[in-house]
Image 1 (tube, rainbow, N blue to C red):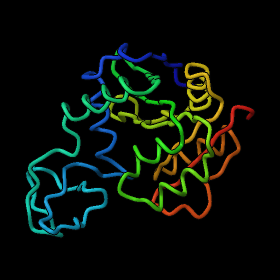
Image 2 (image 1 turned 135 degrees about the vertical axis):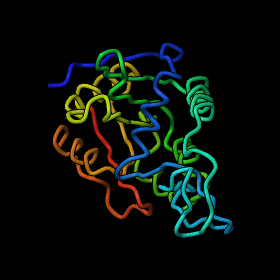
Image 3 (image 1 turned 90 degrees about the vertical axis):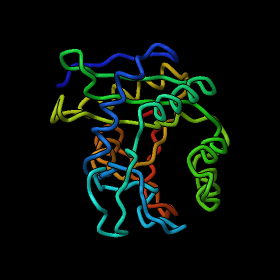
Amino acid sequence: MSELGKFYKEGEIDLPAIVPAYQEAFSGWPWFEVSKCADSYDLQRCAGGLSRTALSEICVTCGNQPNQSAYEPRELIERFQTLEATKPTSWYVESVDEKPALVALAWTALPEDIALEKYSDVPKMQDWLVDTLGSEPVIWLDEVFADKTVRPVGNLTNFRYMCKGFMTALNNIQLAYRTISPAMIRAAETNFGVKPANNIPDRRSLLKIGGEA
C-alpha cells in the first residue's frame, strides 16, 4: 500500500510545488493536454481548447503551432487561490522523497454553484447536474492528479482513505466528481460500490459517493 498522505486547509499548501505534478499528469493518457489549441476556427477542433501538440510542433489538424502550455503556472495558481478564497476547500497530498506523487483538491458548494463553476457554457449539463446532485451542499472532488515520474503505479491505492478524509475535513458525507479516467471510475466502484451516473450529457462520467459506504 502507498503511504497515506496528508490533508491541508486553505492557504496551507505550497501551490507552486504542485504545479509540475499537475502539468505532468494531464499531459499524459487519457487527457493529453499539452498545449492550448492554436486552431484559428471560432469553434476549436480540440476538445476543451487543449491540444496534445507540443509547443515545438505543428498541429496536424489545423497546421498551426501552439505557443502556450495547456496549464501555465501562474494561471493554475490563480485558479487555486480563487477557489480557496471563495469556497470551503481541502487538499490531500501523497509524497515520495518529498516530491508530490498524488494531489487532490476538493471543495464544498451547492449543486447549482458547481454547475456554474464547471459548466458555465453548457446549460443542458447545468440542469442535469442539479437534477442529479439535488439541492443540498456537496463535496466536489475537483482535481486528482498523479505525477507518474515520481510514483509510476499505485497512486489510487488510498482512494477510500482520501475520500473519507475529505468528508471529515469538509463536514459533508456526499462527494461527487466527473472524470474521463477509467482508473478514477474503477476506484469508485472498487472502494464504494458505485457506478457512473446514466444518461449524462457530457463526455465525462459522473460519480456520486455517499458517506454510508
